[in-house]
Image 1 (cartoon, helix red, strand yellow):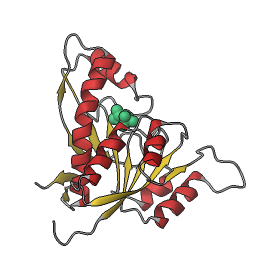
Image 2 (cartoon, helix red, strand yellow; image 1 turned 45 degrees about the vertical axis):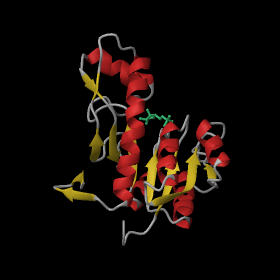
Image 3 (cartoon, helix red, strand yellow; image 1 turned 30 degrees about the vertical axis):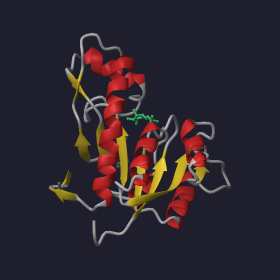
Image 4 (cartoon, protein in one colour; image 1 turned 30 degrees about the horizontal axis):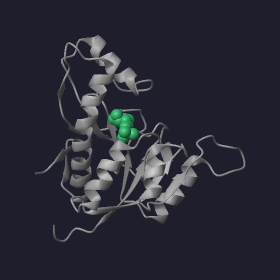
Length: 211
Ligand code: GRF
């Protein structure tokens, strides 16, 4: 790709970090024109933080419980993202709500991945195995990951990309989660790559990826 500058990416993760690893791998292999300059987590003991340290990616642990007299999580995040400076924020299994001030400052520059086909099966309380249990209980025959831009409401912002994954008669929440996660590792790097290559365009306030 010519004429496109490397994008600075900040990844936010609270848990295992397998999506973080998939994106980092794509960056390392030169498939994504970007660099991951920062991992933000609310959980110092998670696998994502260990992976960041092993790979010499700066890890910032943020306390999301705001203690009076100290900077708010929004202020702390604004400061560290500006220091990068971040072009893109990638939420990869991040369990805390992004403060409104950060969402507004990074409008259309924060991506999230959800393990079901939004706008169904999303919102507060829909995380982890609960998402897949709800999909199975609904009788839906298709599930699959959604990548969307983040707005002020949980799992609500403009949908950028989805891949359908069949729901099978013998599925448990665990087996469905496993199959969806595997597809996430393909979809999320592709979406981040499209952003970094400036291939996202908007039509009627809906984002699309140009091939
Ligand atoms: C994924 O299923 C993602 O869709 C959801 O949280 C999970 C994170 O998994 N938002 P990992 O930490 O990337 O392995």
